[in-house]
Image (cartoon, rainbow, N blue to C red):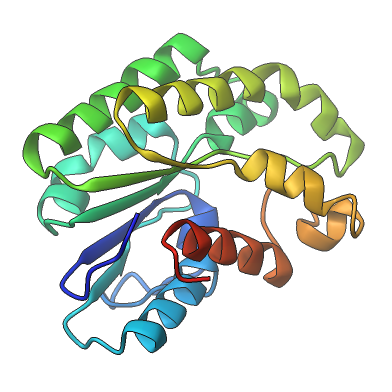
Length: 208
């Protein structure tokens, strides 16, 4: 996927994308991989007309993303949409017994992508939800998360989207340094973890 200097790039998802962005500032990009990716894009393309937005919201599940598609996606008219969603669809099962079955996850994710395809004709980048096994109770989450990773991969093929295989990339990274180096709670990336996502995004765009 090549980035054009006239692109409008939207990053959306949950807390990993949100990463402390200031809601009152529509241009604020947070302090994670979105801001890192944007900084490198802006520096390498040196294009003031390139527009980059962050609309991640902490705690969101795929149903929440679908529910705000008009306000956050369609109004901004992005030409590139980058989505990282799914870990909360698993997490809520274990901390509040709110279960999102894989079929419901696929239904809502497909509906979201259909709206994007119908209304925007944007290029889409799907980032796999990922999980590292720290603390140890995260191992049990695999039963719920793995089917959602499979859904993300399936939809990437179905909609001709770019796929960033973050689950595998973080697993590989955890062979080079301990898992908690990349994400202390197995979910929220450290600075190094955010940099890994940003580098992967830029590589996919041919800009690494």
